Length: 148
Image (cartoon, rainbow, N blue to C red; front, side):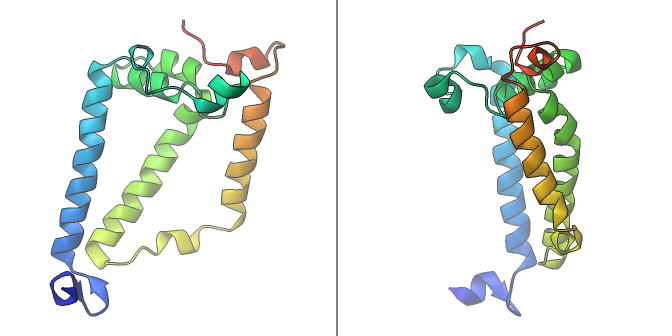
């Protein structure tokens, strides 16, 4: 079985392309589903942290923001989750470049060149953002998911 999928210790390029196509298809189907189905109408797209504690997590509003973004409503998406809208292009670029490099070469070397402080900085921003968006004082109330 190993000879069908591996070559010189790496996953064969044809298998990598198939894996990429499967991942892309899943993401595309998810985007199409989200485009036609409002997150407010789905009971499965809820935030467990919000339901249990009453506080917004850093990801609260991401489903609604993604829905608004897919419909071209950038300002509304930003009001649902500003951090997601700020980080999404960078995260998409990073994942896209990593995936592209992995499909072509069988290795992903981009992560090795990222300074170690960047993941810690992003984690710190997520924690601080999660705290600030729950403070019920202006201007922090602007960070809570809001329908305009």
